[in-house]
Length: 512
Image (cartoon, rainbow, N blue to C red; front, side, top):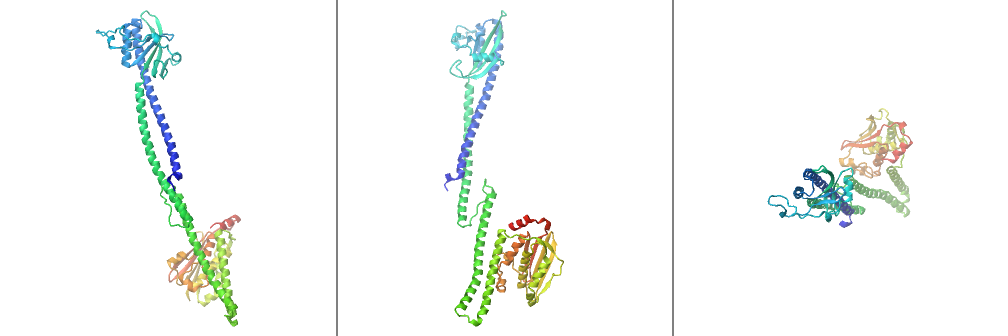
């Protein structure tokens, strides 16, 4: 898989674009807010300087009585140079009556007195009248104009402007209303803005680079996982289950990979079970079919004499019965596994079922001179399907009678334990090895010892018995000590017949 064809690469690309755009947007907002705060602080400082000038101007104007006096000009010159401001004064109609110009060093005489004639003054006629917007705001509720103004008020560069209107009293007691406009340069603010933009840009680029490294590394890891997922899935499709998915990939929930691995394991086991099942069925079918075919051919071609044909036909009949039993057992297994078998629950005397089943093997019990114990126990009543449970008991008793040692003992126990109805069937004899105990309920499984003693057995009895017990929501377990005994225990929950309605019966048949 190409790296750029991965779904994670597309996600990486869109995430990087989105986060980068968001980061740039946040950076711009941050710069704007920072510059706005700095501009406000500069405007506040301009307003404070203006207020100080107005106080000094008011005192000097009251003393000198004229705006163009030498002391007034000197005040204007000293303050504007010290604070680096341009100061303009307008009359009540907004006409400029005093405009600041440039000064040189010759305008201060030896006695440090201001020389009006040496001043390079900008004539009031060359200065624009006060802008109507400024007048309107000063005359309004705010009583002042304090803004960053980029209009061509003085030159083609923006200024910090502070304007207010005051009434001044001259030495003669006359009252004059004037507008005083202070213009502060934006050099500091421009320098500050440039520095902020540079710093924020550097930080943004560093963050973007780190973000790229992080997302790129994570995307490559996830892309590698996606490639492995696809590769291993293709292996599963081909029936190769030799690899499993890693469950420790950051960003991928463990549950997903665990479910996929569990699914592959189930498919693998299912395939192996299917192969084993087919092999076992083929073997079980081949033996009686070969026997039947050989004997029938021998009868037809005269190899078997007529005097012995009935003898061989009896054998053929038994093999046919064995085939019918095998097919019936496999059909029952299919019903159990598909959930189409519906138990007919009712109160059942399990003890009587065991006694009836044991009587079916009375002849074989006598032939082996066996001792039977426990059938005189107290009757055990449970809610169960009597026919299905008798099949279970029949399979277990048949095995016990087959594999008990000559002169041995069959022991039956019946008891209620922790809400479970327990029936145990124990026979003395060779017992089972540990590995045999683990496989004894598998389909078509036969122990080594049973192959010689039970040539007619199909190896399905215990598998079917377990299915039936599970259908009753119970358990069947085996305990054995090699050389001493084998014991099978049936455990069925103690159900209330009134609580088992038709729907529950169906559920029991569908679930396992």
